[in-house]
Amino acid sequence: MALERTFSILKPDVVRRNLIGKVLAKFEEAGLRPVALKKIHMTRAQAEGFYAVHKDRPFFGELVEQMIASPVVVQVLEGENAILKNREVMGATNPANAADGTIRKEFALSIGENSVHGSDAPETAAEEIKFFFTDAEIVG
Ligand code: CMP
Image (cartoon, rainbow, N blue to C red):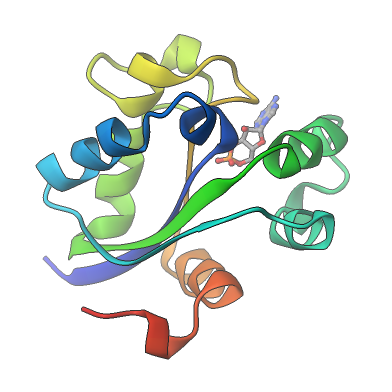
């Protein structure tokens, strides 16, 4: 097993409903450690840049509007196999398909307001961490 870092967002639906602590507990209980964490209100340019890979998808406009509607928490999670573990803890993108005990099963409102984002591979994790954090902000 390898010690990895991955990128995670607690989306507006979590922050708005005062669920930051409950969602962070799910990560910590799974052995994932926040090594950088901040609350931000994403700009439109940030949201469009971060989700650029989805720019031709029909849900892109709605996704950007939802991500900039109110603040989010962005974080870097560290742990053994953190990228895969984070995705297991999050559950399927569509909460209707998410397994019991996952964050999306427990907290997500819809496929758009699905509570959390997590990197899907080592390359995207590195890019997404860099998008929001400097090296100096990450304290392992
Ligand atoms: P996320 O992991 O943040 O990555 C892209 C987001 O687009 C996804 O979670 C969902 O919140 C949102 N989204 C909205 N509709 C869809 C869809 N039909 N398929 C995939 N993602 C969607």
